[in-house]
Every structure is written in C-alpha cells, then in structure tokens.
Length: 215
Image (cartoon, rainbow, N blue to C red):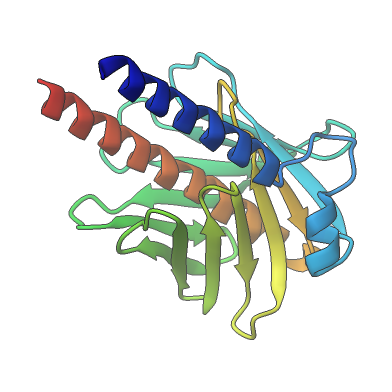
C-alpha cells in the first residue's frame, strides 16, 4: 500500500513538472517572445530579462536587454525589516525605492519612483491557482497564473503594458519581461522586482510553515 501511495505521489509530481514546463511563457535572451504571447497580445516592443547571482549577501538583480546590456540593477539591504530595495538605471541614478509593509496580513510593497510617482502593490491572499494584485495609486492591475509562470500588467483601461514570464525549474529566479509600452518601462521594472520579492516572501513563509508543522 505504501509503495502505491509513493508511486502515485511521484507520478503526480512528474505530471505537475511537465505541465509547468509546457505552460511557462519565459523566453531566453536573444529568442523570440513566446508564441502564445504574440498571439494573445501581439509582438512586444522590447524584451528585458532579470538575473541574480546564486550566492549573495544582499539580494542583487540585474535587468538586461537582448544584447546583455545592463539597463537596471536592484540591491536589497543586508539587514532590513522593510526588505528595503533600491533600483538604479545603467548610469547609477536611482529609479525606485521599494519597501515592505511590516505589519500586514497580506503581502504589500510600497514603491516610490524617483520622479515622485508613488504606488503600492497589495495582494490580500495569493490563491492556489490565480493571483490578482492591485497596483494602488496607478489604477493598474497585475494578474497571473502561478502554474503557467505568467503575469500580465494592465493599465487602468485594461491595456496590456507588459507580460512577465518566470522560468520554471531554475536554481534562481529568472524573468523575461515583454514590454508593450516602453513609456512606463521604469515603473514596470520596479513592479517586476517588487513582485519577485513578494513571491520570495510567500515561498519563505510557506517553508517556515512547513518546517513548523514537521517540527
């Protein structure tokens, strides 16, 4: 009986991995945007890519273009209750300041852009399948599907601004960002970095809960 249960669990995990790999919309630098993205939203104006080192004392993220040019960098304070993160452009100028709201029942990130624009990413509950995050202060919305590793940013009128694909089965988080509106590129990059931190928070909380339950 135990062997049958193990086989069932193993098969379920394999199926989940296969489905995830097939559904992800991440694409590597120098390759075309996912065909489904092009069919659903058209050809992107520009594509960006995030990467970060496997081992770092403070979380560092590079955002590059198709030619591997670094357009943005983000660094998080080594010790910070607010998970304080600063995003800078290629010239080292500050683009955005991102911080976590500590006392909250849900995942919240406050974002202050260098031009004075301020907004908050807030998600009361990350659902099992579908995420919907309000971008308060802009009127935008970020919606996505965890299993498909795919997130879409829309403005207040429902226009698609960017499609973010997360690479599955990666040792460190990697995203492709297909831009459909480069006018708001700074804000979109700040949102993606904030989203990455929110997802990391969720995974950390999940691991802590699992560890406590096992203990």
